Image (cartoon, rainbow, N blue to C red; front, top):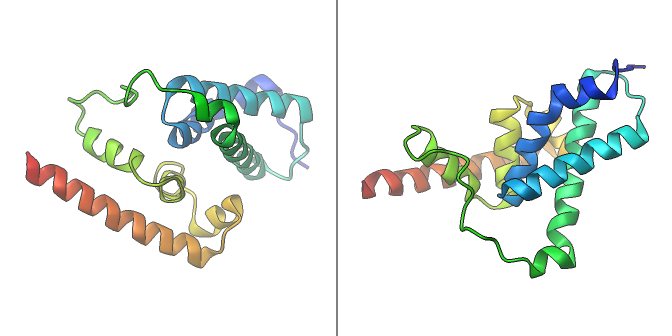
Length: 160
């Protein structure tokens, strides 16, 4: 069994990962912060005994996905109107802004696969376990997401 040192260490170590995944779902900072807070609250409340550090990270990601989905399907979120069209997380002068906005514009199932594969460095097998999908489905979603990103970025660059 794996026993992390203390909840503060787990929060410090995984706060960025949980926040980034939450942000890919809700696309705004306040909701992403609320989701992250709820994830760590559930972690502290449950204090799961897991086999390894990798299992802990996978548990946190799975809980993040579940909390984000719950928020997006709640009746409260359906009645809320965002203050702005997009969250200014990435400065337009940043060279990765086009890529960032292209990734954020993808449908959720493609966005989450891209984020886990490229930003969190999970393998296809690990992503299939985290998302409870087959490896073939993950491979297909990655291929489709890459094609969508390629088209979006090609359009952006041809308009400049």
